[in-house]
Structure formats: structure tokens, C-alpha cells
Amino acid sequence: MAERAAFWGAWLAAAAWGAGALWVQFAGPARLGAWAALGIALLAAAGLRRLGARFGWAALVAAWLSLLFWYQGITPRQDRDWALDVSRGVVARVAGERVTLSNLRDFDWTSPEAATPRWITRRYDLADLESTDMITSVWSNPLIAHLLVSFGFKGGEHVVFSVEIRREEGEAFNEIGGFFRQFELVLIGATERDIVKLRTNFRKEEVRLYPVILSPEARRALFLAYLDLARRLEEEPQFYNTLTANCTTVVYHLAKRLWPGLRPDWRIVASGELPAYLESLGILGGEGALAAREAAALITPRAQSAGEAADFSAAIRAR
Image (cartoon, rainbow, N blue to C red):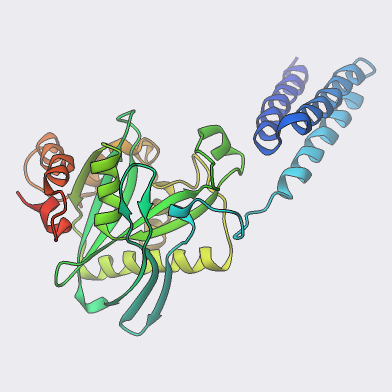
């Protein structure tokens, strides 16, 4: 009985996983052909099982190995026809205390999809790094938020890092594709007037900004961890994954490299609960109960009122 349950469990898993992967990676007649090949292989395994369990298992294992061999051949690339807003990942160069960031996005958005593009280069002194803010952006389900991290420097300048899917031109995100290597991963570096304003003023998302309490050493280490991620993605592309390599889990793994004792938590996946997670770690800034801090953190109305203010970063932090 146990062997039979294991066989049919593995058979159903191959059917579900294989059908999903083939649906994402193929289209049109090629998809139908791939599904047909998978169906024939699984029907053969089911039929051969009638001759004996070992025959069924041999055919099923062969089907699984064929799927995995094909899947492992799908590799991430740097040279696709990318959508403009994710066409360039941030490039970081560190020389002592001096950091040069190029391919920083500083677009002038005119709608949720259209912008006048501008890519800039900025130079920073690590000694001038003085703040870290967590920015969360909710567009539908309050349990799911996009995470951005903003680093502030003396003089009021901020640079924001955002781990995102690297969409091709005309491509739209979907969660299933995120499970099956449809999208590469990109680290966007941007100004707040670009990446925050896009979400508050054009996409009309619910955006909150929370100060994060870190020591100067920890703040510097986290900033450099982002730069290391930029270097690694520049050298070798990676795939986005809806669960294991998304906007929050990638940041969690960056932080875990700095603080190995950092334990996983369900709120890393349910990213809308990140403020509560940071509060449990004792690093969420603000005053009062969590609900009061969440209310004070909402910056969408401030950003919309700021309009074309010269100092957008100051405007969204004004109380």
C-alpha cells in the first residue's frame, strides 16, 4: 500500500510540475507537443506498472530524469530584449571608502507605464551613510508587499535598492512563471523621486516608509551586501523565484550572511507583515504601538501632495 501511494504521488507530482514548467517555457504548437510527450511518458509508466512495480518505477524515474535534464538546461541570460525600466541593473564599484554607482534609474514618470528615461551615476562616501529605511508597497493583497530599502547620506541624498523581476519587452509578471524560470532577477538602484513616486503617484499603491534602527557598522555592512549582490548579478545572471528568490527572500539572505543567527520567519514570505517581523527583531523605528507606527509610516498622501517638489525625499518624510 505504501509503495503504491508513493508511486502515484510521484506520478501526480510529475504531471503537475511538468505541465506547469512546459506551459511556462513553451507556447502554441510547441506547448501542445511537449504536453503530449509528457502525457505519453506518464501513461507508459502507468501501463508498465501493470507488468510489475519495478517496470512502472523505471519508466516514471526515466520521465522525471528527462524533465529535470531539460529543466536544468534552462539558464538565465543577460542579453534579452528587456523592458526599459529593468533594462539596466545597478553597477557598483568600491574603492576604499568611495562608492560609485552607475545605471541608477532616475526616470521622469508620466504614467504607470511611460517615462522619460534617465540613467545616472552617483558617487558616495561610506562615511556619509547615516540612515536606512524600509519601504513597503502594497497594491492588492495586504499580505503581499514589494520591499525596497533606501539608504540615506549626509546632505539628504537617498539611493533605493529594489530586487525585481527582469521582464522582457511586452512581458508581464505572473506568479506561475515565477516558479518556473520565466524571469531573471535584477537589482534596481534608483532615486526616491523615481522608484517611490512611481508607486505613490502613478500606480496609486499603499506605500509606507519605516526607519530601521541599525548601528553604523550594520548599516554599512548591509549597504555593502547590496553592492556585492549587484556585482554577482553583473557577473552571472540568476533566475527570480516566486518563493525562494524574490524581493524579500533575497534581502533576507543578504541579512543572514551578515547576521547568521537570523532565523527564518513566515512573515518573510507574507511580506505585508514585514513591519511586525522587524519589530520582533527590535529594529523597527518609530514610536508607539505597531498600529500607530504603521499609520505614521504611510507616505502615499504626502508623496501625492508633494507633486513636483524639488526635494521629494524631504517631502515624504515631513511630519
